[in-house]
Image (cartoon, rainbow over all chains, first blue to last red; front, side, top):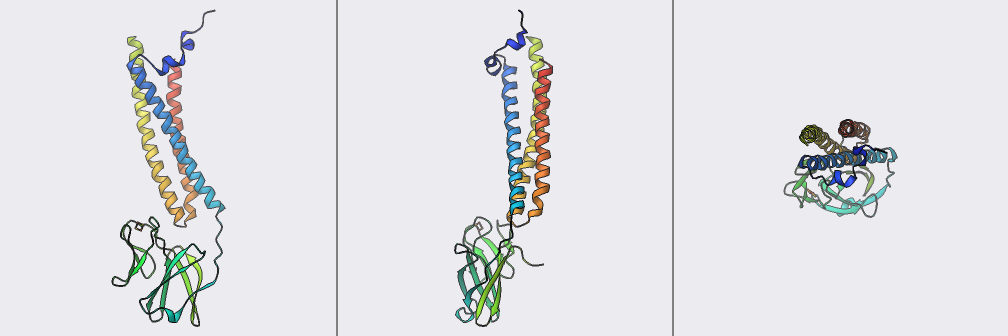
Length: 170
Length: 77
Ligand code: FES
């Protein structure tokens, strides 16, 4: 009834080795295992993004009157909610007959952006992210994505929001 | 005892090499995950599939390296 001494070695002796090389070896092997599991976690993250992108449905936007033409002076601003009641947007009258509207949520860390009339651009007070008033693209600062644009249409005395546009055209 | 220690130091060299490689793969994977998430949030959903495939390959690389270590250990008893 002789058994192999390697097989009989209890786990604790392997995990709490008295040999220095053994000890280093075991802790590094465990670190390697941990790193491999971290890699699995990253992979799971990518799978989650993939599943989200497969389940994504193009949202349907309501058609909604957001302002009256006469109520905003040139260079003036109006805040409104679109497409949902929680989605704050900013409307700017840039010229006599030109209006632009964007989501007011900064694409960096969601601070509320505002229109700077002196610089004619949209600015974020949190980390000095600046966006172009023309198309919402990033001019400076930490944001990497443009501001989502609200597509407007003028119907008589009213400005109507039709849909959201994530990227500037062109 | 001498033999045991030299064998262990050989293993240590091996595991250090594998660990360095895993670190490199993991760094690329972290970058890939953040880049895929950023493009996804920007409304570009076409990057999700290639991102997941490459991430899977990187994970496979890590798993193969880990397996290599455990196998080598088992082989040497
Ligand atoms: S939250 Fe707007 S720049 Fe950081």
